[in-house]
Image (cartoon, rainbow, N blue to C red):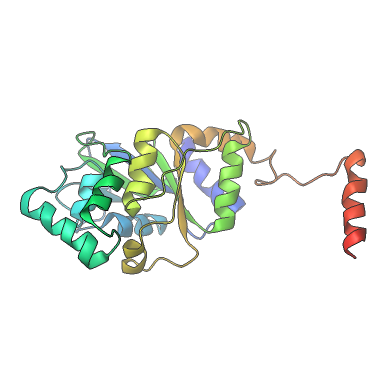
Length: 243
């Protein structure tokens, strides 16, 4: 599978600490999936480390994650009231329930009913074509990915930076088709022990071929910087001035 081949090339070029992560919305689970309950933010880390997880509404340990991935409806009744109280008084990520409502209304809505399973796997082991490829990386690696992604168009992604980790990393790029950068929500970072310098870059799979094609031609990939003669004197003059 071509996406399996992408994985090793990207690990080599970007010097990634672990695997790119494939996200596939599916009506059937993948073979070899790990059992047990899973938080989405934890499943992403496990997939980076080589594990395949078939997430559905039964084994999703987080009601918010179940909703954001479209595996179940938004909590209602007592569960909705408890969620709002927790967000405002527990997590303290929003100053009021009105602020939470505004954040949810102004962001991409979950793909409710799209699939029975969200397969979260290492890209190199993904059994079917991914919908998204996620990179858990540092700022420099994120810079390189975004540069490779815009190398042939120059068009900046329309990012969405507010919400839960699973919303920013999966929901928004899935429903919008846009590349997204996610710093995650602070609770997910603390609870699952993400490193201070880690963030997610989420890339819709239809953008991956362009990224791979750009690698040998772009300095964010493997190309070397070259200075044309008519530009070289400007660089050399700048260096002399500084010295």
